[in-house]
Image (cartoon, rainbow, N blue to C red):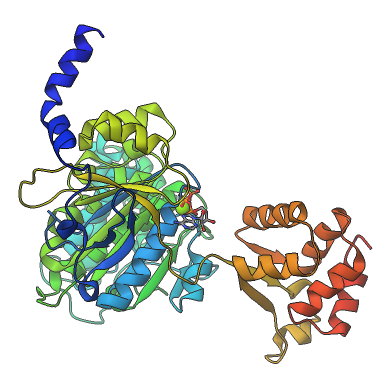
Length: 503
Ligand SMILES: Nc1ncnc2c1ncn2[C@@H]1O[C@H](COP(=O)(O)OP(=O)(O)OP(=O)(O)O)[C@@H](O)[C@H]1O
Ligand SMILES: [Mg+2]
């Protein structure tokens, strides 16, 4: 054993000693809270204590979730949000980068907001804020997403034009806006700059040109999601139950990040406007899943929510595959960190350095399987036991992930509009699995079907499903038995076979 190793042991001495004299799990009174006022997460590995999460004794209600792809981050988030809604009637807003929560939110009776054609979110909307503050926030987003801060002249021109656009519509930029008064859009800001260009008297025409160019990226027809009158009212989101803001159909990362930053800014303002509530539990939880650009920049309002959330009963959950993508200010301030399976040594070392757990715990974390977790909690009083403990697994909440078989490609146009004709069949995994196996498909085929569906957000067109079965040499009788079992009529089954490419 080298000298360094001995020194390490010495500096870890306190942790080791508590580890040797006490079990490496917090005492049960820290894990087991009143079940009507806390959220059940799972059973601890060592002593089998049901861990019920409450933030009463924690520094704050915020949670970070880290782990490799497929380790169970989103599964944990879904479970947590569902139970928070049962127990505290908590509202949840998911900023859904990849659209991976859509089917679950629909299943749970929540609202999905996607940016389809014709959906807009005007980033100049005030939701009660003073125009001058909104203008600052827009500039803040541009600072995070572009290099405009390196060009002070362009930055000044842009900020000025934004304020001018409000003034031109009769807003007092330093006062709370009259309710219902419609805000200008980025298009008007671009027009103001263009007018200046036409006048031709501005001393730095190149700067002006570049400032216009930057804003045009967000206001071109077809990509003007944030430069039109809103069709989406995000002001109401903090009180709308479960809401998924699906950003996956936006053209690229910059658009997704701009949407996420704007949403966080608005939520933060809403949070501050709502009065303090003595009600138990959390009023609202905002989830950022894989939104690295938004979680990694310290100027992002994710950081503000982390700092101020507690007093407003407002929680933030940040999930990421890469813990170093989560800003220090967030990572070191969350009250709870859920560590799922971690693969990279560099991430493991980062976590160990930040959370200060033992090498024994490190090796335990290295062995975690899907859905198993190590949890770190930072208590608001000093405690004499290790903060990190292992959960045997996170116990999930039904409905689990669902699989959807759609009929759209085999229906006639008039059938597609007929409310009496079923367009899709939705199953949880266990039910679908038992229907496949029960009708005689072998487990290898079933596995490959689940894999293919998994690659497409667990949605499959019936024709493709039958094609996949045929390719795997599943007999026609077996396919027919399965289709009847899930509820299709013989007429529809015959039609599927005429349409399917493999007979
Ligand atoms: N605790 C659990 N119990 C049962 N199944 C689980 C559990 N955790 C995860 N799973 C299953 O494992 C799969 C992957 O989980 P999940 O989608 O949550 O991973 P993820 O960490 O969010 O991955 P990604 O980074 O790719 O989004 C899912 O099918 C999920 O149902
Ligand atoms: Mg996920």
